[in-house]
Image 1 (spheres, rainbow, N blue to C red):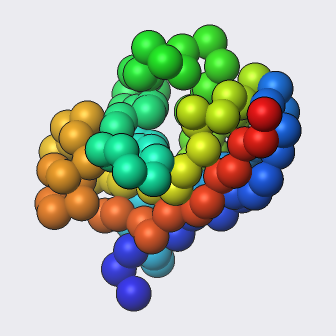
Image 2: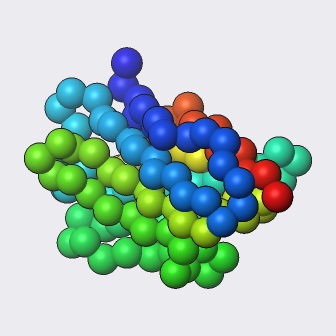
Length: 125
């Protein structure tokens, strides 16, 4: 199936950490594309979280800057999202997306790029 696959979600207390991973279908390589993470909280609009470009430059939502880190393992062809100091408002489903033309928009990536089904993150206060 030509989709991305996320894993690593779970339940943590506020202040805790999780590391999410995103894997690609055979034949798709993250290091030649931009990859990003998006967050869908229950009852809220999907929002951009982080982005890693093919040239390794990054971009973050200001709400997570300094707490989250996006990185890539070229040998494993995996993209990670390290999430530290989690807050209750970080809870929700996290999706990864990747493509050659990439915008920090859930709808654009869902419709035009590879998109994963998501992994659930729960943060208790």
